[in-house]
Image 1 (cartoon, rainbow, N blue to C red):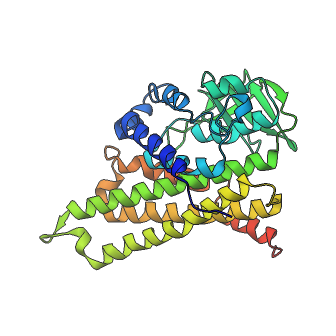
Image 2: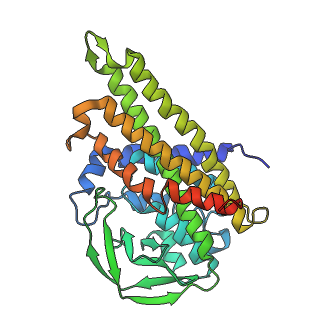
Length: 329
């Protein structure tokens, strides 16, 4: 086994990081809250142009033929930048499912001319449903591709995710797509974004307490504040390797049967949810009153943290899943 990221992985991550820094700064994320579609102008097309949307599609279908190990750090950058686009749902979950089913919808998804979101537990409550062209949804023990559905907007704390209740639509089965694997990809994708969000919260808080003066000294010079930030750093550094390990398990089904894959993915999500919850709590505590204000950018990451910490199962649910996988439940 080789757990080290390659130079190619680093270059891909760095390219996407630079794109987000240029096209999706905090002002663009904040502006997306006020638009009807919660999208950042020209970002989706740029992601398609540099191959991000096609990363997990097989080469014979026009994709890059990459795997989850290569993509997991892209999702960290999605979290770090608080990207409002449904990139995880489209590129990390939907496109592999369409490829497994040899769906005719794959070409347009790779090109970015359509946007696909997911309802991977069949709940009918879907992120970005109103802006997407289709939904890959769980139906019984399989997956289906749904279009022409009706949506009812739901009030949510993170307005850039735009949750909606979905009803009706035209549904076509995705025969050959693995529903359990799609769920594990969604869980892994949320965990990876949680790591990126936690890193951003930590970086923002370190910068703030370094500048904020109290009693003639930077707030960050006080030992209690240092301990808070050290706790967050430790939590993130312990959770991130579990996310990378889970990505390896998902990417190598030949050596990881479904129960082992579920164990690894749930371990990653449980730790990542705990880490981002801790990062959010400590960031808010160290910022003080300004951290509560809508005008201050910290709230963009706090709200994304709270949303994704619980998305596709919170830490408690995934610890139960680990216990089942190792025979303790």
